[in-house]
Amino acid sequence: MAKRTNCHVLGRILVIAGLIGGSGPAPCLSAETGMDVTLNANIVENTCQVSIPEDGKVHLSTVGKNWFYNPDGSTRLQPTDAASGTLFKVRVKSCVGDPSTVNALHFSFQPQTKQWPAGFHQVFINETTPAAGGAGNTGIVIFSKALNSNVLNSDGTSDVVVTTSSTSLVNDYEFYARLQNTGPVTAGKVTSRVVVNAIYN
Image (cartoon, rainbow, N blue to C red; front, top):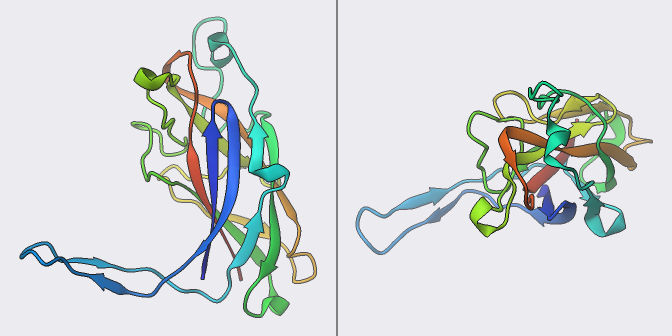
């Protein structure tokens, strides 16, 4: 079974909740000609059940537009800059299979919408549009505290590898989130939902 954890940012609140799902290859066919669709998924034996303490809610600080900029008007932080943010924990509660020879735990983070801000694959998109009261050109970046690095690679893939052992696998793992501009910022809400997977090897 694949392990997923969803992160939601509502207003300036990061909400992370758990979801377990998984299926094998499953054809899904339409009655109309030319409408055949095949869905595929993987089932793995080394997944972990994760949860987020505090009901999965992390409150990001409210900031003014000038927070994003240097005095000369240039962007203050890039998506890879490991500046401080709001700390949250991903709690590994249990793992299936045989974790007795664990070397590492792998976390992956992906936007639930599978969409990115234009030109920024290391920033989680703001799903609240400016027309609906959302902040313009603003998203969320998430960093591993242990590695001090963005959880997303420059191409949008994600594999946060944390060295661990079978005796310390069930534990809390710390991450932090902050706002990130992707262009000229306008005020408003930020909403971003993120799927988190955890496996071990």
